[in-house]
Length: 213
Image (cartoon, rainbow, N blue to C red; front, side):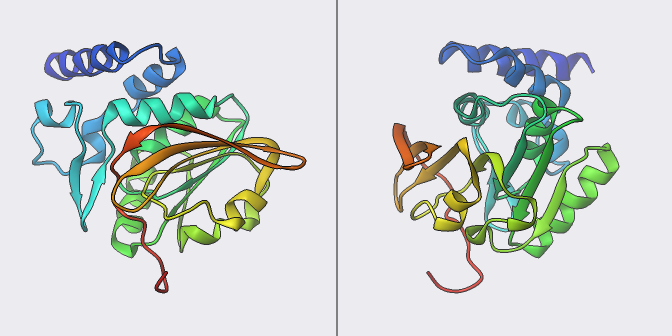
């Protein structure tokens, strides 16, 4: 336990070196230990290092500083309805749920059936109230729309129309957009459309689709 606490503190300190991050984001990381969301054979120093880590199926768990940066851009608040595209390990969805709290709803979409099942079982085992669905994330999830926030955790070729259409007026979407290198996009939906900001370059695992793009 002391080793985990040490590595956790080191991870949080590294994140804070990049700049001011909402305390609720780092508190959520403390409540959801990163090593629980990756294979058992991953060493603790790797699990809490500021790097993406493979989780199988050609996917990774996000780099902690990048995950924190994206959650900070989302400006999450308790009680919000949030959609995540790209469940992966489930760690990011767990972080979101910790911030929006019991009164909030988190729906996360994973196209890979193996990763979906693993994430669903893990959420059940950890008692995390997140709705995990196996489907093509490019279509969003209209059943729970409109969303206060949408976060995309894989490289999207563009912001898909269903995402924008399912976003509440005043809502925020954060997504890495691009093919080889992605620009971190934050869009805020107004009554006349989406106001878009860019927040630096990143590299994410490509988004997968049920049919060729």
